[in-house]
Length: 206
Image (tube, rainbow, N blue to C red; front, side, top):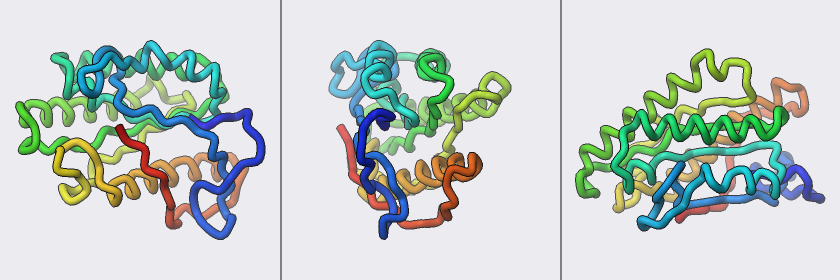
């Protein structure tokens, strides 16, 4: 989450001092939407999000969640999406000025995991349900955008663990986030910036 309160924005994306963004941001890895997350530890986004929002006062929230729910919990994709709805609604209720960008989750390599085929099927169904939800009437007039990354990753973009992206995969993810954010800002006429640009990223992972 990016802070709306910090001073002296720094360059975090782009080059030649073209894109001025605030480097004071948060990153939270290993969390489930609700319940148990990475390493079977209790790490619940729905329990934490309101405190984080109050502390950071973000203008933009980037949200990609659901992988840990699929990996570490015995619940259906429908249940995971329902938990995601609760999380999304909490963020949007916090402020009508915040922009929320929600991404599909990366693919899961079934050969790298126990019960990998089942988990891959759950991940695919979760992504489909999430896409249909966020493109539907419920969120039509909200400050929320769905970033569909289902087709941008290949097996070469995944680490051997079958769930995490390689550095090149994270670059592709960053480009997708960046294009959506710049597109929104440009449509609001706050910036006149081309979107097909190189992106430098700082990788944050579990």
